[in-house]
Image 1: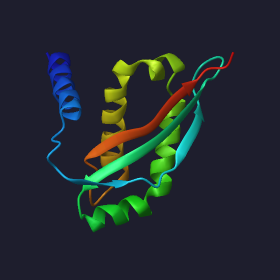
Image 2 (image 1 turned 90 degrees about the vertical axis):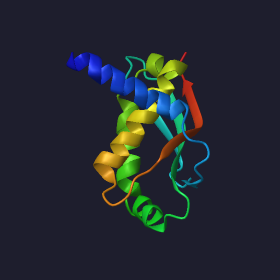
Image 3 (image 1 turned 30 degrees about the horizontal axis):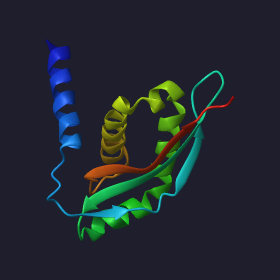
Image 4 (image 1 turned 90 degrees about the horizontal axis):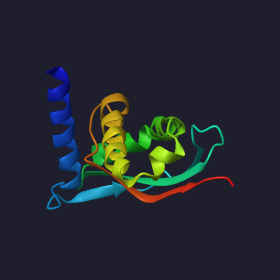
Length: 130
């Protein structure tokens, strides 16, 4: 029963990401840069990702906190993608889950006084070695 409830909650969260309220105006933090990270494969691939964090428009406190916690956010993103395989990363069906996990982790484990409302991939490439 608990597993079923968890799956329903996860599904609702996933749907809310895909069908997020587009009427809400957001500002975007775009200064994390582009990450180049090896995957967790026997023959590692490289994932190149640039992530934008959306926060409530005009929320200067959130912008300040994101800026101040930039080191922790970058470290989390590196660790997050290092745990993934190329097959996981190349599957477009997983991208919504990645967005949800990144958003929730940043809000719950890094930010303390504010929260981000959205995560977007500006760049997302997986390059496998030949």
